[in-house]
Length: 387
Image 1 (tube, one colour):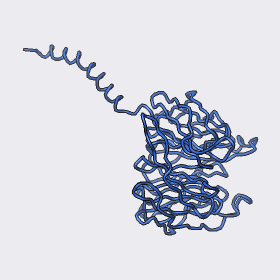
Image 2: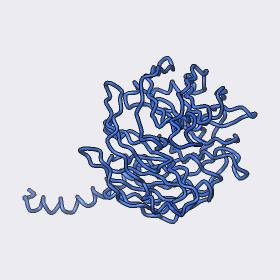
Image 3: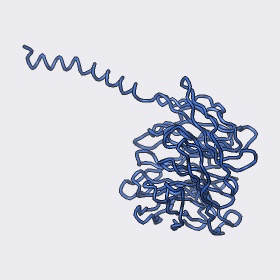
């Protein structure tokens, strides 16, 4: 018979082996790389949508490849099934939203054009899709409107169902806010409401949403400080707080969100960069905001200053506290995005034509440049395959 001492010795010998086996098994189940889709601006360098892969272990990006020719596919959205991508841009000199199917062959991903539907109210600055994959929204900056589209079961776009015009501009900043300028679209976590930050109005336009019918009804507004210029917004992971990034005055406004009523109440506005640090910049504006998957940090990109501001989030109140400002190792960060696991951040330098990768410290939120920096023509949007 084996006594207790012998059993203990056996366990001591076996446990390290089991630990190694389990570790290898977990590593084998985890993806080693992730697709990165890049929307680009209208420029001599860009020809459409580009693709790269990110190694999730090392944070190294592959070189980018052109996968779809389209003029100015600035923003992209991923279908919830992960098999289709939507882009706003131009085809045959018409402002459209286009649908693409993702094809994978021998580990390589590319796009196959499905169809496109004309927006009918000028070019769009942003596109989004609901979690059921039935409704697409676009924001028309020049026209100051929100457009709604229905989606077929095969992922193609069925038709445009609505165009909703926004109100007048706030005129707080002459030349920038003389008219409405819709800039982003998205849904509440329960998708009962849709939100469109409007830079010209100093408001977040709120709609009641019916994603099954692909229709919106005006519901109300979230009010920003005069001259703020709201651009993009994100919900906190708990669904109780909303963070709105203000392009004009380089700030973030935190709102409490009432999910039942679909209302936003502003609680604080904090600068992303001190005004004295912007004094010498010829151009300065915020571009993108992200909430870390663990809900503990918020990231805001600053153009001109060419940094990402990192805030920690008070888990009781949602209040923001500055952690750091990290240089993006590029020019004009038009977009930043976090990998779904929150381990890496990619900064898209529109004017430097680069994508730079940073490691994210999950405990402090701090960013560390990992020296992975690849060429990408006029990158405006960074989209990951699991979004």
